[in-house]
Image 1 (cartoon, one colour):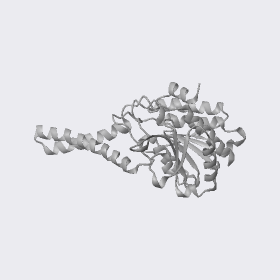
Image 2 (cartoon, rainbow, N blue to C red):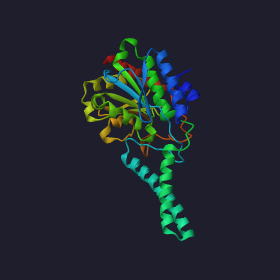
Image 3 (spheres, rainbow, N blue to C red):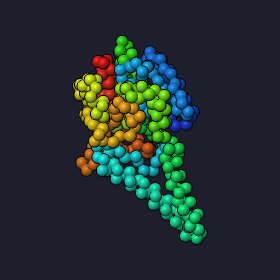
Image 4 (cartoon, rainbow, N blue to C red):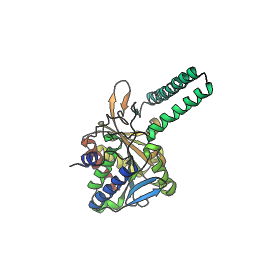
Length: 305
């Protein structure tokens, strides 16, 4: 059975404390069976899983292992279409504000109490935000971010034993609550935050277009040419080595100066590349071809360093 199949059957939801603990126990056992030593980095409510030594490794592969709350409206991302991305986010905000205003206005009309109306409108707005982060668990999280966890495991399994000191792996906690796990790690490992080469895998399972978003500082590194070579040599998917300056992809790599964001996209004529269905019950797709592409290309990259 593949990593993604096992994860979706044994640990499809990783939101509550008990679910996360069960996953961490399972993952650490899997790492041990592959010959890796692991530890838990704990700060506050964040429990990050660390494989290897990011401080000495030449590259660190990361993904967040927590899963989100379910939302009535999908978190629709268009990394290369900034206008549509901002428009969609503004639309979501407008829907929340309108709903808050309708509820508050209705109560105000019925009670003739403007203060109560305003307070209720504010409460509804904050209630929606609370449910987005702490509401009922989404039961289908194949792409967000079981795909990233599975991709990390594919890299771990394919990396030759002789090259394992070159790579480290981190599974971050609480990305869905505002990238709290990666922020906690970065705050206690400031040298790594500044200098560590980090490749973050988030929503890499749905879509044949695999994007690698890098900033100017990262592209100036000598390792970047090797990454391009390793990725472009791999068959089966369509890679895009792109600039973060002309894109937007909010995930854990943002906490690190040399962070690279990796995601999979589908493509439509009107809006271009997009990531959809996440945070909804329709998030059921994670293609093994994507995991094979990333597992092969990124393990090869680590070996070449």
